Length: 364
Image (cartoon, rainbow, N blue to C red):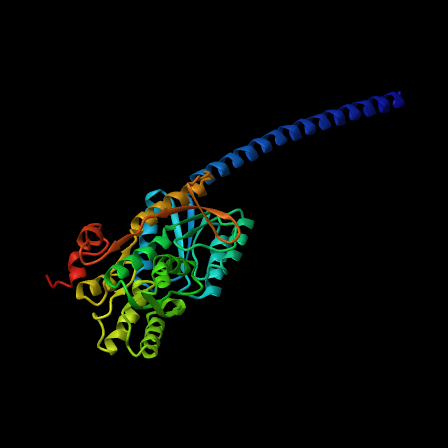
């Protein structure tokens, strides 16, 4: 009898264990299903969060020490924000190493697209590569990045800028001794401006009616270096110079300072470009004959529009391409405008680029 009871007890214990095991398995299955549901919900929330996040554009700038680039910064920021995106801006003020480090910071901060105004066209190629490694596309703003797999280039037709300068000066001075004061040799735009200038001058040089008696770059685009160059040009030619083409209004300012020291300001025609306020004021004063106006509001708005579209993954097709030494870069090039005393009001002032009172210094 005792043995029968023991057998019955063992059978009952076995059945209990089976039931417990079954219940545990059921609970485990239930928990697994719940876990998957929570995980799926979490993924959906994360996905939704990413979709709701603002596009973030990184803007790596060479410098903010010039009036022109302060305008670009403010206009680009305004344009990006008007499109519902945000922008982080860092400026290196002419320091290549710092600009590279700042661009790396922007990449590390997870920007969706990097826009670069390079100080050194060659040095920033490394940043393009690093950005691509992080899955970030790169746009060059106004200045081309050389020898890199650049995704987009937005600027003005910079060779045309040089052509406009040279045409204006040759109309005023069809023959004589010319001086060319270039920009920074490290800036690709400086080479493009010069190329455009000499495309116009070369036929006249070949004819022997124009002689370029001095031709030098101005390191970092500074007026101080342009001043030194112009001093050297005047000394080498015993002040016998008939015309000067400067690579921008800042360098034109250095040129005119050197001319003033010799009592020649206003006597020798000087061309610049960028339509900086100081340059335009010199046109009114008569010490500079022309500048080239590049409507940077158009540039900043176009660059912002393309940057945000590219950051969203949209494929941009352009009609123009510029060779940067490695690839044919998709490019958008806007037209520049020659400005002198005759059309100041209908261009620069009408567009609100500078106010009439600032241009004329309240002299009217």
